[in-house]
Length: 395
Ligand code: PLP
Image (cartoon, rainbow, N blue to C red):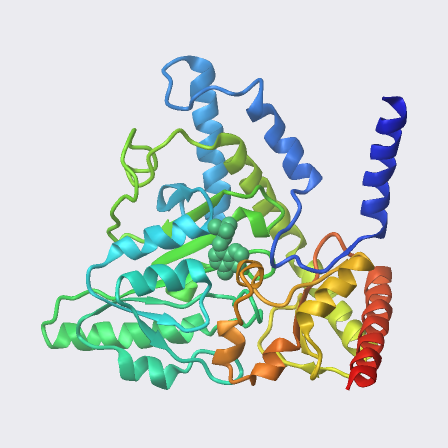
């Protein structure tokens, strides 16, 4: 037994020491401080916040304070947030705001695309840069359009969308509708799952009515998210029950999850500028040390996102070969990749099938250091070289 435990311990140790994890857009580990903050709420402070006795009231108050911290980070109040079991649920909830016409960006995450499709949503095109085509947006808004959904940061390319400009167009449309006596409202929803880590978000400044947040992408727990809801938006519940979260998300509150989310948000805000600077440097380093690639997301990308294309090589094979060297990267959104589906995002920006097949996504994060970046460059170069030699020998 002792031998087995020693083996297990060594195994875990080795795994952590040698692994170079470059897929932080897919998942971030719960940070130590977040985990510490959550722990008491699994055991000593386990009470149901809805219960009438004093210890439970303390939990209810801790929960509200944690919501206030998350809300404050986006310039909102605790009462504006609906806590959900992740971003997928928050995105689904956002779309209950309307029975009217919906427009959504063609590069959205599946948790937006699928629900938008279900409501008969129409696509807004992107430009080859990955940015929203504002002309296409304007041409598709009708007097019946009630909801426009554009993510703040794309999860495959890291493209940061000009949401303030989208909000400006929406303001003009609303003004014009008012002048013509049309009462139909028009809401802007944005999925900011990938953004909270590295962007300073303010819902009023950006002109957002509905904003999706995701704890799992900011070193918080998985299965915890939130939807910011402005006073102009009227939602319908997806589930019915005890009436928690203003009746919009019934079910006993996930207190440890929300406490962890708040801590994660607090840490993200504290380290935002330093992290941005660090990732920008690492991006420069990696791009200068890597060989023989085409950079796909040249502009408008978040500091920790790199999408590279190795022409003529199957990136899925590269992912597998790199895994053997304990370097973890992605070919696209984790969920799409696991189903073997070609990226709709890379297709939307006009890449050929061959380019899509050869594209790798690298996303830095807090598990990395500078030494790992140099090491990763070396390993990726070696693996690509060997793979090219293999392909040449076979042809
Ligand atoms: N939206 C974006 C942009 C994402 O990247 C993800 C997850 O990868 C989601 C939504 C879904 O998040 P979850 O699986 O935590 O619900």
